[in-house]
Length: 137
Image (cartoon, rainbow, N blue to C red; front, side, top):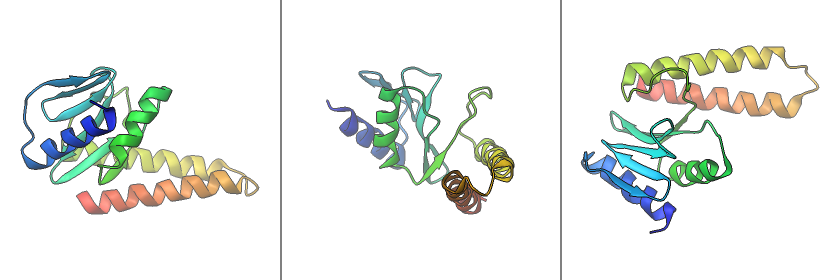
């Protein structure tokens, strides 16, 4: 099965019943309602409340492809901190988003006004994070 189709089927399962059935397709693993890329160290797509989240913290070119497939299915994007144990709880996701917003704001303030493209990209991500925070609050 193609990876994009596998991701789509897993997303459908998450939305409708969040099955605990384990399935694998190449380097994608679906277990207990979470889709992983290249093993359990990288949660790719997961559901919190009624929303699907895609982890957009990139690693390899193949993970970037997985992110692209999962982003099509997700309601929101999130950068998960790999140093913090992964939990699919609203509080955990909210805390992660708040941390990301703080980090982005700090990075934005450090940039020179001449770095307009970086400032624009960071500003867009800050806006996305704030929209996500409001939606799950």
